Image 1: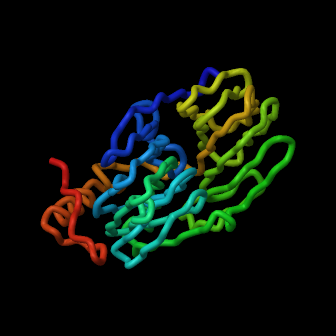
Image 2 (image 1 turned 90 degrees about the vertical axis):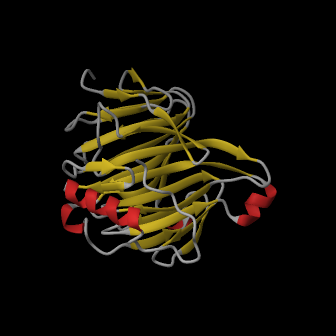
Amino acid sequence: MSNLILIQPRTEDVEGQPILRPLPSARCRSVGPFVFFDHMLPTDYAPGGGVNIRQHPHIGLSTLTYLFEGELQHKDSLGSDQLVKPRDVSWMTAGHAVAHVERTPEALRCSGSRLHGLQLWLALPEADEQGEPSYSHHPADSLPVSEALGVRIRLIAGHGFCLQAPVPVRSPTLYAELHMESGATQLIPDEHRERAIYLIDGEALLDDEPLPLHGMAVLPPGESYTLSACTSCWLVVIGGDPIGPRRMNWNFVASNPALIDQARQRWAIGDWPKVPGETERIELPR
């Protein structure tokens, strides 16, 4: 286990929503296609409050939003206007240019609400970086689930654990949510070249190594491991084939830094697809 990389996330705040962000880090820039991992911590919003992430741009990536509690309204420059509920997958592929908005639905803003979930970014293969943007929504009951011997696995995207998710990923991907009863074990096979585990709640061992709560353990390639639940626990596993070096700047991801420079210039001057009905936007950071 000496080659296991343990990452403690840094604390961030996105428009008032507290976040833990283990990826990217100085110790690990990506895991498979995953270049960005945000854990939106459980947050209670009083009546009149909520998330309001104004119009902002992306290139070169797909965003995957997956909620445990609460709801978000997704709107984008393609005309999508989708209510995202717990354990739905909200999947947006930016391609050469997309803009979107995420906010607490009006009904929950009036009543007050609680939000908890994950948003991950997946870099696109070079052939798709400048492709057409797209959006798809996958309800919770469309995601495959297996349950045996005290382990419940829901496959969020990609393939793994003998399951295949309907989300249209662009490269070999693994993204799964695991709930384990105390004393249960689960093999983490080497079917993907890169893998990492993030412990959301509880206590668990990877072989004989304790996993840090709200920490990410990046596994060495080519080896299988046994995950053991010391208490009832809750984890996610991500992975897939490495996507190659990527530059990240603000909300832009690209293999070629010239694409990022071009995107920054376009957003700054307002030459960008707009979300219908939206006038406010997040300005380019200096």
